[in-house]
Image (cartoon, rainbow, N blue to C red; front, side, top):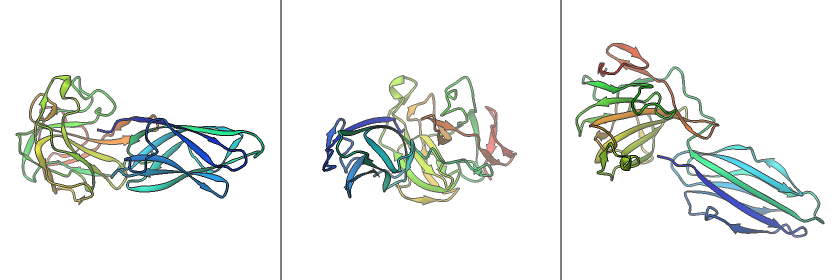
Length: 283
């Protein structure tokens, strides 16, 4: 799971030479960090860049404070750093070189692209082998664990440990974990689940959770098709029994993840929020 991080950098700029001295408050200016904001001196201007070494997009919310300086180019409040990219964020310059100048910026970041929109005509394949049937053990917006925005439209499918999990929609594998052997209903298990995350062509993220220890069958960067095996089901993380938890997430401008309602292709027809206890056969 992605966690919000908050970084802050403060710079003092010489009024005559426009040379910046950085006070590193939290280490996020190091270029070998997974996500890094740094500056470059360009012709008496300061260029701000974002280096994203992660395999998935990151959204950053910037708060920029300037004294005797102005934005010369770009510098939006909401900025998306694409996966594995070094991207221009903005450029600032001194207004009056004979006066003291300074700038300060902070940012919050979250996994995903806040500018992405879920494709309304996307059709999802049930995430298990064609011809097999599994029961919905928890559906949308229930009194169980599917109450918050990130899980409101999640679906749980009951299945034995080791059941092959298929991609419900094609895309690129951007995140995964498979080393946990911990599972149960204690809060100690909240962040202990194994998972695979697939980025779809519209920028949304398909999350497959509670996977078997060492049960992931793909690697980060793999491009998969709907119906392709990606993992084996398990019972890791916060779980009351063996099942697959599936959700499609967007990153919102409110700085949070929100699940979206999806359309499932089933032997019963197209269903968007199948009721608990319903047996669904994969086509």
